Length: 339
Figure 1 (cartoon, rainbow, N blue to C red):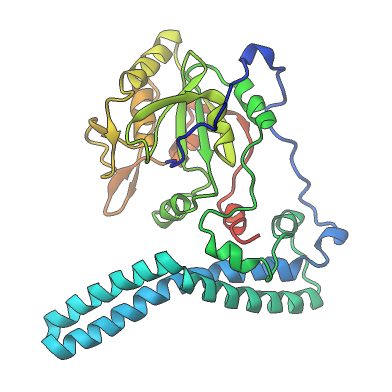
Figure 2 (figure 1 turned 90 degrees about the vertical axis):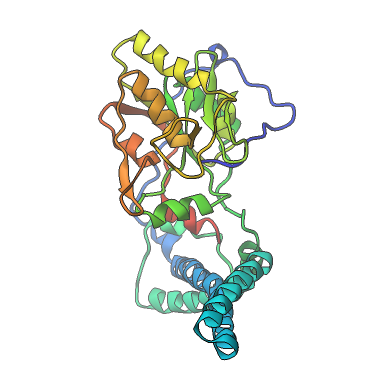
């Protein structure tokens, strides 16, 4: 899933032939802790964790409190039925209030950040040293800048993929490859997938066509569309390229022909129903396209045993091989929302 479809003004893709072939992966960061970088990391790490945990609680409190108040008033005036209606009205009012003001998230996040930072100072005194990866991820945390970050639903310390790295990823793409992405700016998609048991490291998938474009289906577009190859990289914070093991070129072309035939002709599947083809969500769109070429992606069971295809199913399939990746981790991505 992905929700930002517009190409930047003046965007011009660089021809693939003009690019040098670069290494398939970004250089891995060392994981052993270094005292010079981790000695003061505990307050930042604990503060970030506290802000995130308490921020979630804070978002729940306004709807919960108003639902309780509504139930109390409603039951007093109209008994059991009135209590139920009052609870629903209060729940909705609390949801709207929190969405508009983010007050619960702000108060909860600040309280959690302050408490977490205090615990971090105690942990540092006890000799606790976070890993270098966590120390670097949370180095930008501060109580002074925390309010603005809590109030901005699209804030992340993770930058969009640069044009240079996008060119690196695009140089490894071949027709029929999948590009799996994630954008930490809109973290609701990660949280929603995490809630149903998905790893949520990745949230969206598209497929590379013969003309060096990517076909996918977006929430805001509400139909299958085609985009410049580099754009699917630069419009996200993380990306990886997977190569299906097509039996031959004809199998690959059947997949691409099916995907291309759906462009502009199907709507987004808000029911997430794998049984019909008139509406498709992004993972369903690619799963059914791959099936035409003999690549079978088995769905998982979620929400009352409903079949669902997530990005995890593509990553774990023995018929797909990863050829390039920036890497992505749900927990580190979540930390980026306050650091």
